[in-house]
Image (cartoon, rainbow, N blue to C red; front, top):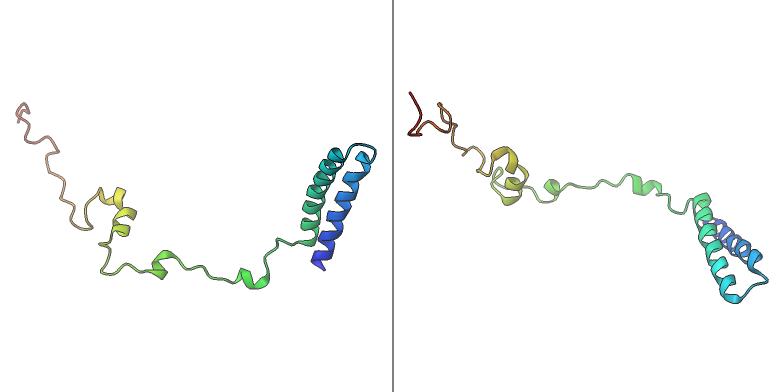
Length: 113
């Protein structure tokens, strides 16, 4: 039933495109019929709901990358490092050195104590 509705509007669009150009050259007739087919196909597809997903497509569960291929060993893979790069600042998890107590410039020669 959907295909017949779609084909009806497609042919109706072709016919309506032919009508204004029926006394002109064949090139213009073909262009007008193509424009009518474009609009008729869009309207027919919308009314017949050809692109609408079916009920069985709605319940499909898409698995994430972690479900398909879990990271073994607790996060030392390249993918895990890439995900947490900005948080860990390029270090492995739990290996980031502590920040110095007196700041990053504690050993400068010109610093007054």
